[in-house]
Image (tube, rainbow, N blue to C red; front, side, top):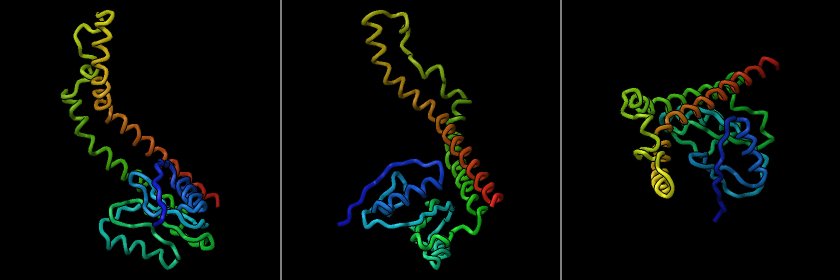
Length: 208
């Protein structure tokens, strides 16, 4: 039975993610399942692999098979492809690195736009109802904090007892109340980074 392990990491750059996967393969850990919650690796002999990641929205298995077949003749292997996964991980041996899954720097850069657009749609749209609750007043910011009447006028043990009792509920209300804003902040960070990487890749094309 082969040894496997799951590694939990977050990347803001496709290039850095590809480099890391290549380093893992050089240590004998080869990607067998792309990240959902984590990266699943299987231990084997060290290999000099070249990894490339593309971002596509493919709705069914026929579309996936057609897409993957475009690169099979160039000795690229797609790791566990299936529909609606969006991220597609390809690898080949280092001696085949002159083959590319991207026709040019423009097509390589476009994956960042596809990723940013999907992220914006899949995250922002579901939390719009939460903002509607804020606007309608169903969720009130003044009810997120400590609600015990006269808490801040209490003293000694009585204050400590009520404060410690209510604190877990305050933290729970805070996490629920601020959740949409934290998600929007993360989406904004990813979106800005994706746009920066898109422009950077296009700039490399102009300089070559």
